[in-house]
View (tube, helix red, strand yellow):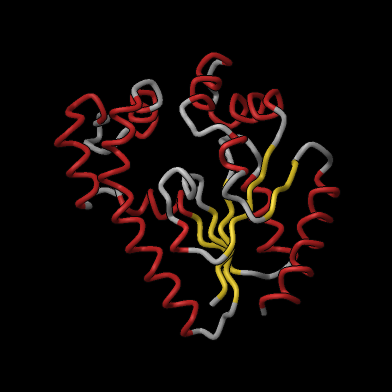
Length: 201
């Protein structure tokens, strides 16, 4: 199994690249964000640990985890973000390997792992190569505001809470600049796939 790790800052366009791999190239995608949601789903051990540390402030009226409130807390306090990661990441890694095992048993030879914190959490042991996507800061801010319905100030806080792109580049094997049209991005992704598949598969 060859695993390409896709990463990049919030609002950089990872989801679009994942869609291209999935829909146009027909490659399975493992989404770390979906695994993280599963790790803290209602009644899970992850949810219980979060409630224990963060308290009633992150519990909604229905007794479930309020992800928006939790996000606003951790993106404004790096120490609390690190604690959240300590809770969630081991569970996510376990779910990741379960997914890889399942895809391997199905006979698949390549998978894309969409993992926002691949570099920050030093998860290089999980992938064979690292693909970093970058985008202009104003494009990222606009996407975050539109997607999360938050202020520009809050969008900037979330960007600054993450590792800067220049540092990430030092760990990347391939880099995309998502600063054009969707068709241009699609062409770049397909070109990379043709290159990678010839070398590694």
